[in-house]
Amino acid sequence: MSLSRLAHVSIRARDLAASRRFYAEVLGLRDGSRPPFPFPGAWLYLGDDEADFGVVHLIGDDGTDEALSAYLGDRGGGTGGAVDHVAFLADDWPRLRARLTRLGVDFVERTVPALGLRQVFVTDPSGVVVELNYGAGG
Image (cartoon, rainbow, N blue to C red; front, side, top):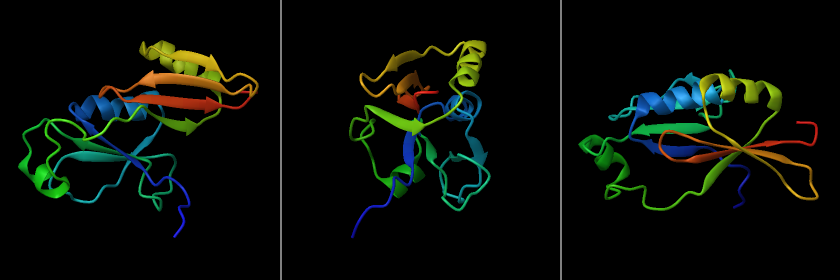
């Protein structure tokens, strides 16, 4: 067995609507089809092709949904582990910077020493840090 790529990231979102808006409006992901699970959620896609089953899966978790606990297990009020951040390759930093500024979203910008790789960090409504990586031309 060998791994080929990351399939998706699942985030338990206490405020599903706010998280959905963040990933769609701030990061430009597309809200798309999702199986009829017995709990609330959303699948977000990088583009129009839904063959990859989405890159971010949001799971609505207000701590009271028995169907969610039955399907995914009880996490005891937390995610069961710590995720430091999720990273995406990106392009057109000036366009995203304008969007972040327009929407009032705070960000931190860094450059990786010796690589010239620009990193931009934003935090989603659930507290997950999202890193966007831009090549030297950005």
